[in-house]
Length: 89
Image 1 (cartoon, rainbow, N blue to C red):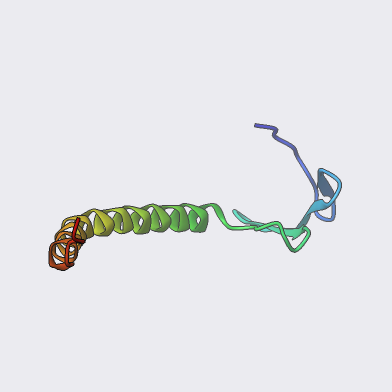
Image 2: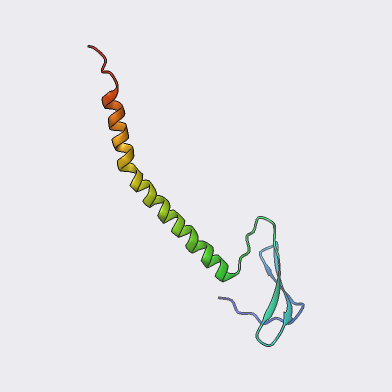
C-alpha cells in the first residue's frame, strides 16, 4: 500500500486519466474528489463489498435453482421420448 500525505487542493494521479483531489479536511473526515472516465466504476469500499456479497448470493441461488430443476427436466424428457411413436424397422 502506498501512503501519501496531501494538503487541501493537492492531487494524486492514478495512471493518465484518474485524478484524486483532496477537497477538505475536517476533524476526522477527508472529502475527496475523483475524476475518472465514464467506464471506470467507482464505489465506496463498504458498497463494493455489499454488491460483491449480493452477486455471490444470487449466483449461489441460481446454481441451486438450476440443480433443483434438473430432475424435473430429466423426468419430462423421459416422458416425451417414451410417448413418441417408435419408427418401424
